[in-house]
Image (cartoon, rainbow, N blue to C red; front, side, top):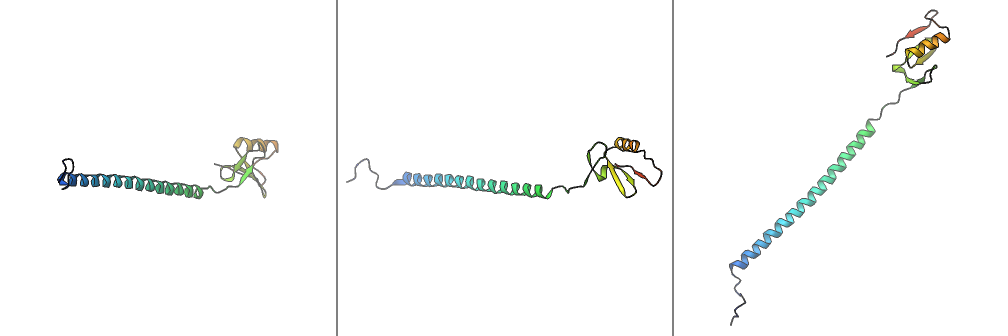
Length: 121
C-alpha cells in the first residue's frame, strides 16, 4: 500500500526539476569559470604592459653629453648649443652671446690675431 504523501513513480515534474537544477548549476559554474579566466587575463595583460613600460623606460635613457662651464657666469652648457671662442688650441664655451662679449671685453680680445668666433645655436 502506498500512502498519500509519497510519490514512488517520480513523475515528469521531478525529472524536469532535476534537469532545471542541472542547467542552473552549469550556468553558475560557467559564470564562475568566465570570471576567473578574465581575472587571469587582466593580470597577465597588466604584467605584460608593465614589463613593456619598464623596457621602454630603460631603453629611452638619454645619452650623456659633455658639459662645459661658462668662464663668466659659471653655467654649464652643452657643446652643441654653446657660443664658443677659440684662442689657439684653447676653446672656451659660453652660455650666451652676452657672456662671450663680457669675457672678450674683460680680456681685451678681438677678432684679429688668429682668434675665431663661432656662433652657437
